[in-house]
Structure formats: structure tokens, C-alpha cells
Picture 1: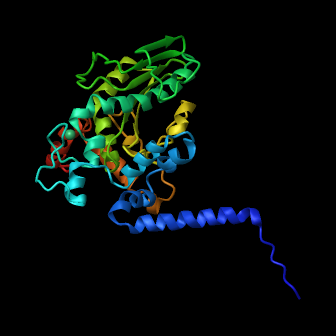
Picture 2: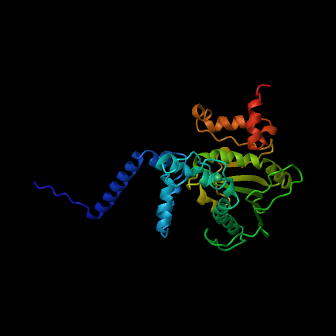
Picture 3: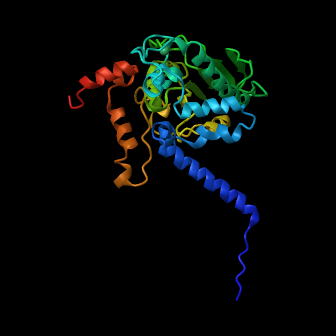
Length: 334
Ligand SMILES: [Zn+2]
């Protein structure tokens, strides 16, 4: 008997491609230091898949842009530390940043930690990304009809207002009811129909600092949320932190494309990614629903929310640095 194996010719190309891709990934992982950042990314369950979407979605990406992004992921940026530690071409002891002269010139410092770039390059990067989100919100409010692409020179006006609501771009709000030193949040949307005030704050930290940055932003604007609550007593007050790290990663829990579907954007997840304020106190977190009492009640998010809510208002309202000092002295049993 003759067995006829039918080979699906059209699939061979796809199989070969998959096999080659798997081989490339394995090779890169084995490269140790050069593959370290990428391996960490692949294995990080917290980071969503969008960080690599520019490779598949951005069809017209120039070759040099792709090459330079690869260079970043493989930690080959020619910084002083790189030359000192890896190529050996910097034999001196000086590895201080050429721009600020304060910290070691590492890739993380150049991309997200240099004070000399904060008001220039970082600001441009931040605004280019954030304005797209802001225009989407404006479109939802019927204030604009189109959303310009991130690379356009078009910048939003400071204020948009119509009968449905008001949207403010980077305008300081003067507080009457609280001492709000940090009153300049990225944008605030006052939705009259849905009776909701949403403040959005975006930042672009180094890959390992996402959670810290988010907590920092939440604490920073606690007095501002208090002020908004007093000023709009009938409205629901929300602050959403959008954290997209310097290599394009964002938490799986923050569904960026959903932002466009306001108000269903950004699920109400635990933690400091989303902060709704309740009337019981300042910055109370809503406890995440628990599916099982055995595991759910002991889950990190449940316990952490509970612990956070048990702190006095003065602690929850502090800014991040202040909080770090105060919490060490706080005795929960007193
Ligand atoms: Zn620097």
C-alpha cells in the first residue's frame, strides 16, 4: 500500500519562517548581556505585547530607525559606560554624563534620567505621544474632527470648550480649597454629560521604574484631586496615569487603545494605575473584587489596597518622597 503524504506547499514558507524566528530568539537569549534586555521583556508577564508592535505595524519605518531601536534593545548605545565596560575604548575613570555631568552615562540615564534633557528632548517625546491621546478625547467631546499623527507639528490649544464639556491641556489649576503645589497635570477633561472629571498624566520612565513612577504621580496630584472634588461635588473625579516606558512597554493592565473609547478606557484596575476618589477620605483605593476567598483575600492587590486605605489621610496625601520618610515612622498599632 502506498501512503501518499500531501505536503501543503503554501505552508512550507510559513513553517520555515517560524523556525527561523524561533532560532533567532534562542540565539539572542544566549547572547547574555546583549540579549538581556530583550529576554527580560519577553519573560515579563506584566508588560503588554505592544512594545514590539512598531516592527509589525509601522510599515514605513525607515531602516535607520529600526536599526537604532535594535541597538537600544541590545544595549549597544555608545555611552561612556558602554565604552568603559564593554569596548574598552574609554580607559579613563570618567563615566559622567556629557550633558548634565551628574550621573553615570548609561543607556537608562540617557533615555530617561538626564536632568539636562528633561525640558527639551523628553518633553518633545512626551508631548508627541500624549497629544494623540488628548486629541482622541477631544474627538469624543466633539471638539475636533480629526486626530493628527504624532509626528505632525500640530499642538493642542490650552483650552477647548463646548456644551458637552471642557478640556484643558497642560494648564495649572489654581486651588482654592487645598494647598496644591503640583497643580499642572498633563490634561483634564470635564465631561458635563457624564458628570466626570478625568485628569490624565503620562510619563516615560526607564523600564524598571514603571510602578514607582505611577505611585509617584498619584501621590503628587492627591491635593489636586481633593481640590477638584471640592470644586465639582456632583462629579466623579478620576486620575489616570499612563506609563509607557522608554522602550515602549506598558502594563498589560493599561489598555492604551481603549483610551479612544472614552469613558470605557483604562479598566478600573487595582493599584495606582487608576485612582478614583471616594468620599470616605482622600485617595481611597477601591478594593479589587475577589473571586475566591482563599486566594483572593490574600492576593497582593487586595491586601495592599486594604493596607493603603488604613493609613491616615496625611500619609496618603503626601508626595512620594515625603511618604517614604513618614511611612518608616508610622506605627499602625498606635
Ligand atoms: Zn545627564
